[in-house]
Amino acid sequence: MFLDTLDHESFFHAVMDTIPSSILILDESLIVRTVNSNFLEKSHGSLHTTLGKRLQEIFPAAFQDTPLDQQIREVIGSGKTLRRRRMTYRAPGVALRTYSYSICPLQLQGGSRGVILVMDDVTDLLQLGEEVRRMQLHLASVVESAGDLIISTDSHGAIMTWNTAAEKSTGYAEGEVRGSELSGHFEEPHKQEVESSFRGISEIDDCHSIEWPMRCKSGETIPVSWRLSRMTSHTGDVTGVVVVGRSLVEQRAMEAQIHQGEKLAALGIVIGGIAHEIRNPLGVSSAAAQLMRNRMGSPILLGECIDKVIGGIDRASLVVESLLRFARPQPITETTQVNVVNMLKNALMFAAGEAAVGTRYEWNPPAETADICAEGVQNLLELVFINLMLNAFQAMPNGGVLTIDVRRDGKEVIVEIGDSGPGIPEAHLRKIFDPFFTTRSDSRRSGLGLSVSHSIVRQHGGDVSVRTALGMGTTFAVRIPAAREAS
Amino acid sequence: MDDDQDMCWVLEAALSRIDWMAVTANSAQEALGLISQQTFPIAFVDARLPDMDGFRLSARFRIIRPAMSVILISGYFLADDAGILDAMRASTIDGFLAKPFQIDAIAAAVSKGAKG
Image 1 (cartoon, rainbow over the protein chains, first blue to last red):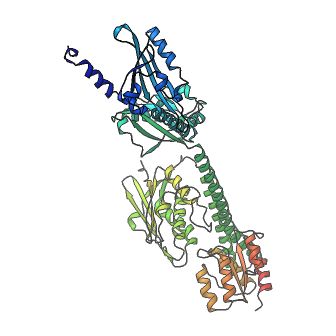
Image 2 (tube, each protein chain N blue to C red):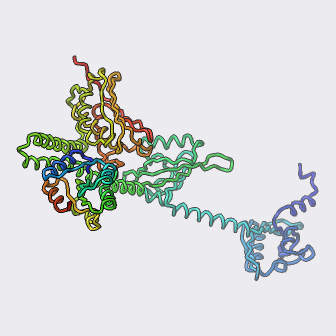
Image 3 (cartoon, chains in turn red, purple):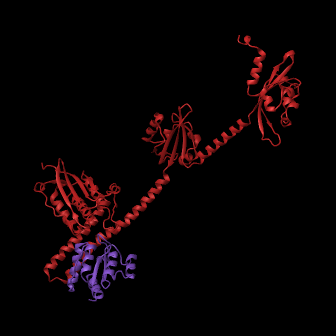
């Protein structure tokens, strides 16, 4: 219908001249019957120099290695179209150009046959393709040689690619995992987390990393820190996820090594501290005993000597006991009612030796606190408060004030031991209950005191908290269960 | 000087046995105060005081009172510690006693070191 309204000749020329390819129509004798303007532009020719010429005459010698005339004859003979062949144009001093061409059989007027030859210069396209391929190869080699695990998945979390680092870290080759669910490589509860990340795929952002230990082929799991980022199509749809993981195996090993080194260094300090702590009272006891030998005649000195001997041995024993408590925390089985005020007085007597000159530590407990009793093991609780008081005194090497406060709070007893020392810096607060943590470079304390105290209080079912202000002082608050009412 | 009061008591008792009068100090600060005001023939210094280590305190004594003998006492160091040997060589200290020590060693140090 529509064709009836067309002027065929002008339609033909319009089509010929708008198609961005070179078009020639040839007859059986390979004589050019028609060409389009695109061909004339490309060949720098004119209708006058082209029409009626044989193919060899108008095609430069540079094309001659393509048997174009033979192919045209075959198409005319067989009536079959020859599609998308390539020929190259090699001319001296000109960069190699590549053309894609097709030859289509054509019925000419008067029953003779011909062909239509359509040619396109695809040099730039090919170069572009080559570049894209090179880029892809480059990207692929980057992904392959990266030290991080780089995994891509589709939008449902099925694995599409899996780089060499992922193979090396997990033992699974790409072929074994392609198409499987990524979440299947994680143990619960992390598996759930991975799955829910993919369920909320549009929420995924690559600003955060998350640690999900990954299961290896060998059955063991390795610590890996992951970062997820969405892949989106040009229309903005999420097409998949790139999952980049950094194996933390080496980092953990290094941390463990550093930690081990720190522990050993700490152990050295501890041992030094212990030596000092034990040899001091031993020195006192030994010297007092030596004095006794020579002074059997002086009853006053003799009495003093005996006190010192016993006191020194007690102090050395306390250090050893602290060590053993730390080494072997025992569950608490037998508890008694402990009078808190009396216990604190004992502890203060023990610790007072550490008080620097100019320290005020006199303590007059209010009358209403005299009957407060805790439920626990007397000598263990005493050890806790000796340690807290020793710490308080040592925080005040140039003197200061030790405060002691006791009160009932429901079913608990709260004891607060405070000092007016420099306070504890923020950075240390996390670590003060760690075994061996001490800020004393002179190793007078092993760094065990607080950790032992903490574990004793926990064994009693209580807890220790700390309030501190730089330059103002520090207060440790110990909560322990109050004595059960005597039935 | 020793921050351990009992240790000071021991030294005092040991010295009074050989008829020496001792003055005790529990901190480096206190000791420096005493030394600046009076002359002493000999000082027994604990290696680890709360406010200064014994080596540094001994070195200051050397400057303030060059003639005074300084004996370092410690439960922390061993007699063959590099720090001790260095201090002996540099004559920052005149002698070293490890805790626990023999009372007689105190007397020996006094008779050897005190030329007063």
